[in-house]
Length: 196
Image (cartoon, rainbow, N blue to C red; front, side):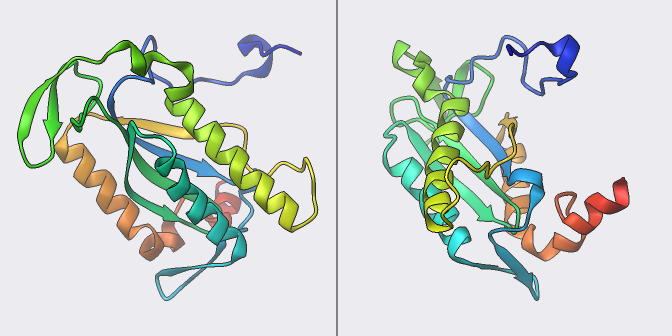
């Protein structure tokens, strides 16, 4: 059955008319199916990853090694989700989004960037990058646990368009401190139960 917003009551968190293949910095959060803690545990404020967590970690790195126009920034694998910053580049320039024209170039400050057609490919959108990552992790983990075609991730993911350096620094701090704040994390299963 084709998706119908009136029937399924799913509200999009995406920016209307925004081109998610456009050069920019993006913060994404991807949760496991039913927010099950499959990647390890938090002990004394540190994330201790298990074999599934190692796959999630390694595939996140691999995702950025196979895409020459995408850079990896801070990320963390948590017990039931992953947070990460990805940057779609424009010819070596490190941009913030969604402001066209002014871009941030590491070590050189603000400069001009005019995205080209190569960034409009559907395979280069944030959605395509996340789908590819989710698919690679699911395949490896389902092979490891002998559960073919079993869902591993929740259907959607969260993304935030990073608009400036202050925003970027706040997101980086959030990612770095996420294991320390696991007890307060909205994705922590004990907190999900309290909200019901």
